Image 1 (cartoon, rainbow, N blue to C red):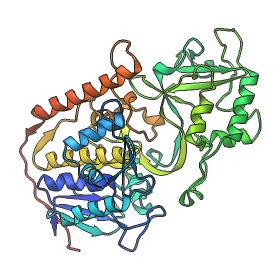
Image 2 (cartoon, one colour; image 1 turned 180 degrees about the horizontal axis):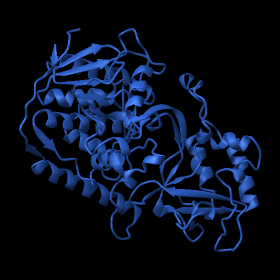
Image 3 (cartoon, rainbow, N blue to C red; image 1 turned 45 degrees about the vertical axis):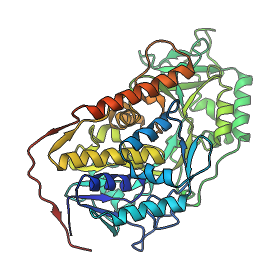
Image 4 (cartoon, one colour; image 1 turned 180 degrees about the vertical axis):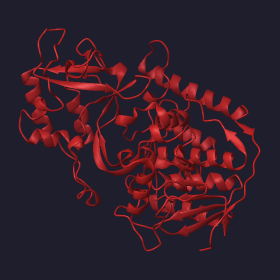
Length: 455
């Protein structure tokens, strides 16, 4: 067969990218490892876009929720994933949940029947030389992961999520907390410090020990801890003072309110360029989410914390996208390669779909001799793309769901409920303006479809 572009991976991102390319009139080879005799430890079927974990796409509220706004934007842009999700939705209140088997079957059927897509059940072991989108997800085959590591540098490829909770900056009580450098070293005051006295620390330590933990899945159990991502509750179990000699070390941190060192301190570090999101340093955890919210709100200064992301720890494969990818998801060292989905460091079904859609559209424009401008940062798609391709801190980059903390801030002081509506209203207006403006500019094209052996 002949094809214009090769998409590797038939999950949510790969299926969406292939669909967008095919709808643009391009010939697509979609390679999916499952069904070729290969399998992953997490998938149960050979179906495309299989939902491995929950059957929920989360909130469908486009008026006051960033995820719901992303749903709306994807519907507007003709997303295959959203179309099939809407067809196969099941009751879930304000959330969008689906019948997972019928959803996957319908995506597989749509892809398989599209005249511009050839679905090939095969494992790809190396990065191709022609136009390619890599959308292999968190369980990328070891051989391909090795090839990606060789191209990007092994230090830029992670195999473990070590997720510390992320807090919205405007929910931190700075009457209690204060700025300082880490352990008062250096001239900058780049960390927010939340102090604990002895009784508060002991209660917090006990809460970590007693809190309900999420067990590892079978396919995660043999993934070793790294020293840099030890769960905070595991550290707590090693002794009552272990945390005070680790991430909660108070030495050198004079509390300006008391002039003394606290018994222990919780530090937060800026997580995005806009300064709207701050992560709790060293607090990767397997505590269940309800226990995280309850316990972390006992930290002085975080009593009213709003969380953009809660902590977690699980096996994953993702690249350090902010330093490796350009604004259209191309690998800077090899521009014929784009990445999409969870391997870029976005987290969640619908986020993977969104980045897959953008990768497909960017590639389609390029292959037809055009340039597609990225969506505005005020949109959910633009905010997520901007975070992945440069807005996040590369050195501390970890997977992230879409949330309002990724958006440009709303100027001035507003009520929380009003602010959310202002984000979504602004996002819809920005998307409409983007769609109504000349998004693409024609460029001379000298393109011949890549030819490969028919399978």
